[in-house]
Structures are given as C-alpha cells and as structure tokens.
Amino acid sequence: MNHEEIQRFSPHLPEPGPVRGRILAVANQKGGVGKTTTTINLATALAACGKRVLVVDLDPQGNASTGLGIREERRSHNIYSVIVGDRPLDDSVLESRVPGMFVAPSNVDLSGAELELIDLPEREHRLRRALEQSELRYDYILIDCPPALGLLTLNALVAADAVLVPLQAEFYALEGLSHLIRTIKRIKRALNPALEIQGIVLTMYDRRNNLCDQVAQDVRAHMGDAVYDTVIPRNVRVSEAPSHGKPVLIYDMNCAGSQAYIRLAREILRREQTSGPVPALAS
Image (tube, rainbow, N blue to C red):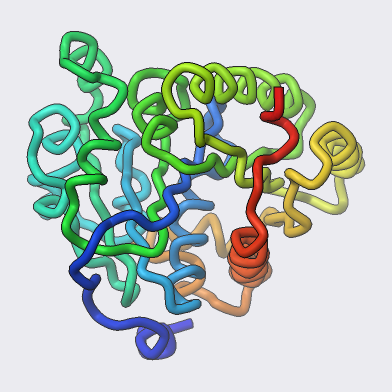
C-alpha cells in the first residue's frame, strides 16, 4: 500500500472535540514479542479503515517513533515533556506519513522518567490526565508500552480502556502471560476498575515449528476467546520495514505480515462492536 492508496481512507487532520476514543495499551513485560511492530501496523490498518488513530510512544527506546518515520530532531516536544513536565499532549502530537494517524513521540529523555515520576503527585494518573485534557479527537489511541511493569506501563494501564497483549509463541509464553494478567487484575482493583483485556495476539508465528503449534494450543486452551483468531507470522518484510521508517503496510502491503495485520484490525473492530470483559479478568 503506497501513500496514495492510504490517502483516500482518512481525512488529513484530527477533528476538534473530546479525545475520548478507545484507548488500548499494547503491553507485555517481556521484550522482543512484537509490541512495537503490532502497535504501528495495527494503527496503520485502523487508519486505513477510516479511523483517526493516535500512537503514544511510551517506550524510552522510541522504536515506534522511528518505525513511523519521526526523525529525532522532530521529537523535542515528546511524551516525556507531557507526563513529567505537564506540557499539553496536543503540543507533542505529530502527523505520521499515514493519513489519519498521529504520533506522540518518545526519545531518550523518557529513560529517566521512572525515577522522576516517583516523587510527582498522582504519578500513576499523569498520562490519563493528559489524554483527558486533549482537545483533539481520535477514534483509537494505541499506547506502545516499554518491556517492563514499571511506572510508565502503569500509567498506560491506568489510562487505558483495555489491554492488547502481543504474545510470542514460545516455551515461557504462558508463564509471562500469567504474570501480566495478575498485574492487570491488581490495577483493575486498585486504580482502573474499567480495565479489560481486549485480546491476545500470537506473534512471530512459524507454522513449520511444532513448538509454535503446541504453545498456540495451550494459550487458546487457557485463555479461550481472549485469543484472536488472527496470528502474526514471522515475515522478513515486517522486519525490514522499520529500517525504512515505514509500517509494513506501506512498505509492502501484499506480504504475509501486512495481510495479517489487516485481518487483525478487522477482527478487533468486530470485537469492539460486541465488547465485554474477557473472562480472564473476572476474578
């Protein structure tokens, strides 16, 4: 999908009005499971479906910003200045190359935020407050979380309506997932009663690998309908796209990875139409 093909799906700028769209935290405490890749490509697919989407890059590595082509010199007003410096979120929002999709970028400044947040008032609610005070409207806000369950991820989970969990089909997948679900339950009880698991997406899936199949069966047996039907395959084009500063849907729309993210976006939109708490958080 090139720029012209995406252009027709969405207006150029977000509209004024309340920010309160659907807020999804893309989270897993384990690194390398496809959180950032899922965030930027799902956001692109949602924008291609006509949704106005904001990507909040909450990872100090800034990989979502880089993967969306936001150069370092454009990140002087970033998410660090929002949650630590109380700068309005709207001041940090930049247009991406995908019409209808916008980015609140991150840079290395955010690496010190965990320590700085400790002594700040309402430290767990600062991102939520920034989103509530925004004057721009989005249909979806996707928060790319860091690979740790610290104060940055906590801010994302307090701000979110639901959690989307990318899960690599590997041996320790269920163990890490159980830890994350316990954390989400604690946040639901103490800080964000409305928090749900929106869904779990299996990533880096290799159908030639028997272990992948076994892990997928185990995850579906334990988590049931919480697991999306769509799986994201291992795909060279998905791996190449970030080095070009492009979502894979722009880099190569026809590759297996792009098609998987389009299917995932459709599945999420269908699920949103009949959304309800996932049984994994019932207790």
